[in-house]
Length: 189
Image (cartoon, rainbow, N blue to C red; front, side):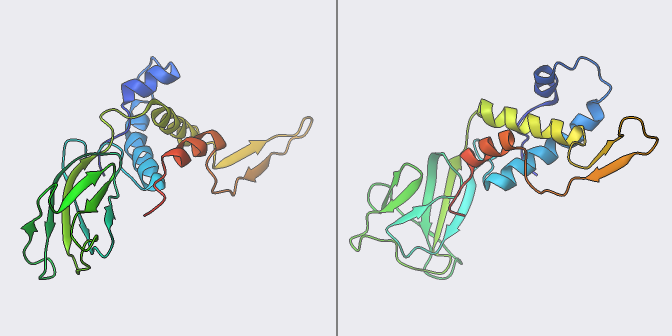
């Protein structure tokens, strides 16, 4: 499932919770909320800061756009002409160069040759620490789920003995959470 975007201690400090009454519920929701944020934004943020990510690409263009951003460093770029059975290392500053979050070809043709499973890129990417706005939005999402704000609302009209139940049927995130997640969404996957 990957690394969590925040800890129970951070959440409790943010919400001003001092008792241990809801620790089990919080511990259960943290990985789910973290995974939701990663899935929604189409990136992991912190999972590949210390552990390398291996990505395969068929080439055919002048650059390879890496999926996980921001790219910290590229450990290796390898090429396979036998459909991924064996790989040969390409030389940095001779065959390729890192340009921000992309790998750019320095080949005479100006592009990476198109090959099935042709390029294997090993790199490190993400944030050393989770950006504070993303962390707060994720903690707010935990509160949203913890308080069951999206499931059932019951209201009782004044002066009646009946209760009216309203089921919320929306798949939208609360606007303040969605705004932050949208800022971090990877738009090219």
